[in-house]
Image (cartoon, rainbow, N blue to C red):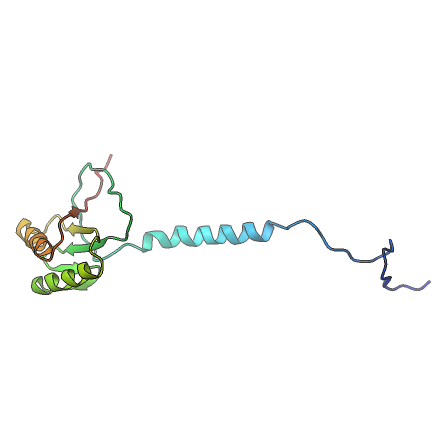
Length: 144
């Protein structure tokens, strides 16, 4: 008795190998589940800008087709674009440049609820002077 592979090059019915015509989806499902977990963990970490305590208001979500520009006013009245601290005069120049690059960019103002009303209004006035006509105010939804 000899043991070995049958290397027939025909349609022999011995131990010849043939192509499998079915797709194994188990590895695909495993990869998709890993990606889902990664995105679920990473999404809360992708918040923009400086940490501020937003006021609560019962409003609907704003619909936007493009990435908005977020201007944050901290508790002490300092304006930030994303995480970059700016002086009030540099804010107008920076917004003017951004508006020239993208004239229809939506602008949202995140003001800390303990910031002075005048500081937030000053930032909004500089945004208007830079040519921004529509400004959205960001709030948190009230607790239920």
